[in-house]
Image (cartoon, rainbow, N blue to C red; front, side, top):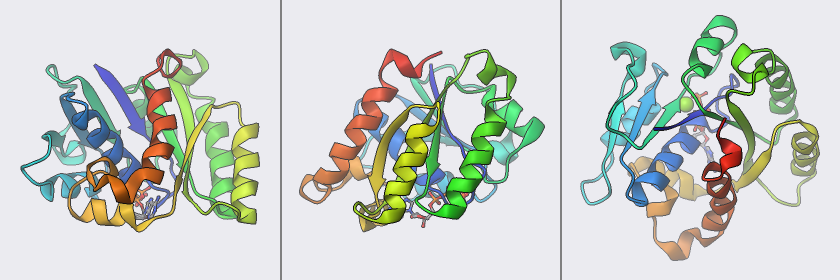
Length: 211
Ligand SMILES: Nc1ncnc2c1ncn2[C@@H]1O[C@H](COP(=O)(O)OP(=O)(O)OP(=O)(O)O)[C@@H](O)[C@H]1O
Ligand SMILES: [Mg+2]
């Protein structure tokens, strides 16, 4: 089973948005997908509750309250994780993942927080032993802004693959309220988003993303 966690202790950077979109990407490719939501906010579980019947099913587990056992019958497990996780809790969560995707927003506060987090995560045993692969994604990007160029420079300097950027668009909000991913919106309104996701999903489907 493929296990992908979306993780960054900084609140609001797009973890649930990216987790639900990765889940709907794999579901739209015919994979059997589960989302485990470790966040008592339950954003991914709420998203699933809004999901209509005419799109591929995704199973959800409210791992924050029901506990978590890895499913036996799924191709892909996506894990949505709360903000503010550090120390032992961080180590315990990372144990469950082959791949960790770290969204970062173009803002000085988020970049500084990300720098500290990247330092912390490199000291987690499983990361030190290269038993989990990390990647960063720039989220809510507005191209041609100074702060985005700062973020790009910052992410390129990290010794973690910078696998893609997602623009700031209402498409994510419109999709989220309907329990969909941007992959499931009308193609004419999301072609730019599809191009951006292609670079992320290409990496996720490559051997480079597997320990
Ligand atoms: N690329 C994007 N374009 C526009 N809005 C976005 C984008 N990514 C996320 N958002 C919005 O930003 C807000 C925060 O996103 P989200 O809930 O995914 O972050 P989070 O990291 O899961 O937050 P938390 O730390 O609270 O769990 C949401 O309102 C979401 O709809
Ligand atoms: Mg969230």
